[in-house]
Image (tube, rainbow, N blue to C red; front, side, top):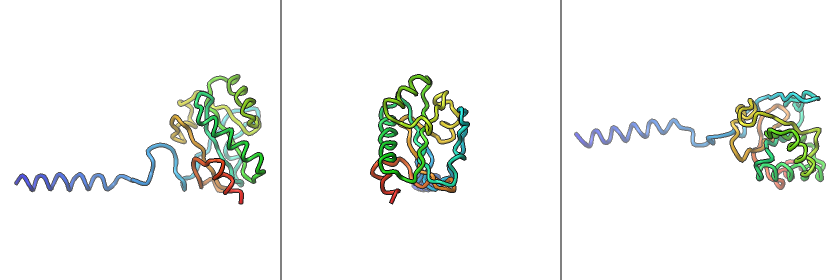
Length: 161
């Protein structure tokens, strides 16, 4: 009787764990997902829909997160020097506009294609994209579908060929 109970427990565990998707990460969106639209109130009232019809790299970062800041700056410089057809959109989660502006100047990132999403992790964009510390970037195609994630400058160059 003990063996039957043990076998039943094992079968139950296997059954329950078989429904867990092992291919999908716990945080963030995946390649193949439709990128959620977002709107940030700026003087230009930019939103992700402004970029539909073109390939766009959305880079989420903050000046207090050194890795995301460096990654964002490198992607911008790579795209600028390669003169790629990829549109760049930088979204910062800094809480201070002056720190954000100073960081853009120091990193030589284009102000016109950058947005400040105040409220940090409580910002709706942060939640829609299921971001976490370390942030990320997404390459979104003309139809709004994520085609690549966490691109390095070298990988970005491959998309321009």
